[in-house]
Amino acid sequence: MEINIVKSTEGEFTFHAQNENSTITLCAGEELSPGVAAFRPMQLVLVSLGSCMLIDVLNILQKQKIIPEDYDVQVTGTRAHAVPKVFKNITIHYKLKGNIPPRKVERAIGLSRDKYCSVYKMLYPTVEIFTKFSINE
Image (cartoon, rainbow, N blue to C red):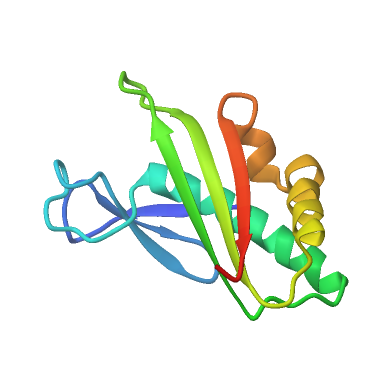
């Protein structure tokens, strides 16, 4: 796997990360990248965890012929106050719509957490990670 990070014309602390298929823009935040609308690196950690687990959950449900009508995943993290400002804890809330048995969602989340999600496995030794879900709320 290879990712290239290249300088952006938008400022010294703004970059483009490129893989073979797409490009995303990253920045250092408002203090070092004023006016730049882009993801910050620690936000991408939350995106990586949430999307990795979501892919697993949807795939597991789909194999059981359970297709959510809609979904939304909210990922929130609390960071340490001192540098390095690592995540102390992260909560992932799956909001699903459709005729979905709760026990199937619990099982899918458990399988993602315990077996499949590489991002979870990398973060879990140092970050407390909580999961929850709601259906049709």
